[in-house]
Image (cartoon, rainbow, N blue to C red):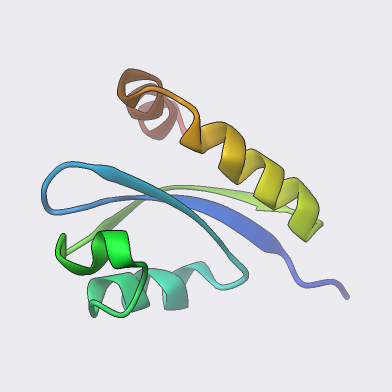
Length: 83
C-alpha cells in the first residue's frame, strides 16, 4: 500500500491563500493553526482548509503544488470554490 500525497490550500485569517504539500492533511493544517507550520502562516492564524487534491506519487503532488502557486488570486478563488 502506498502513502497518498496531497496538495492543499488553506485560507489564512487575513484572507490570503497558502498552498502546500503533505502526506497527512489534518496534521499539517493543525500545525499551521498552532503557529508551527510554514513561516508564511505563523502570523496569519487561524487557518481554514479550503481545498485538497490527492496523488499517488510525491512528484505528481509537488508538480501540482507548483502549478497552483503560479495561479493568480482570482484563479485560486475559483479553484477553491469549484473544488
